[in-house]
Amino acid sequence: MKRALWILPASEWCRADAIDRVLLDADERHRRRIMLTGESGTRFLLDLPQATALHDGDGLVLEDGSIVCVVGKGEALVEVTAENAAALVRLAWDALLKVSSAGVDDVLTQMVVSAVAGASRDFMK
Image 1 (cartoon, rainbow, N blue to C red):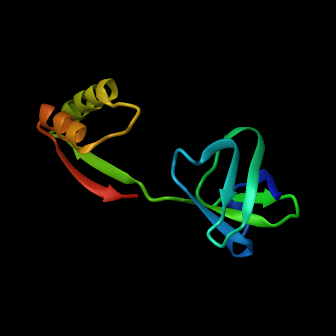
Image 2: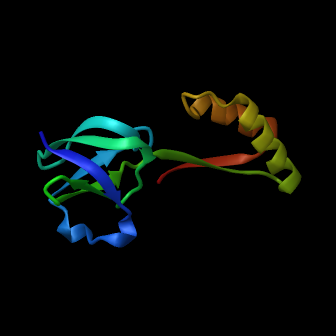
């Protein structure tokens, strides 16, 4: 079984050197130990000493010295605007009190935005 034992930050290696890539969402990028399979079929165990936040472009170094690139999966985001700074602060406060751990959904977004007569638009990161 191949194992990845350490991480190279994106700025310290060349993506062209990667033997494979793993596409991970935000929750999947904070791990200590998990089985992963790259897009080209490389199977390996991420086996770090502690849970670590992986970032887009980081390299997972396998025991044989080969590198698998971490690719952050696009996530739905919402941009919210308000009439003025005070309204935006009130909106942020309300959002902090109401956002569930499941994330921001359409109903919550509309509820919070309508509470302060703000505006929103969806976009992908």
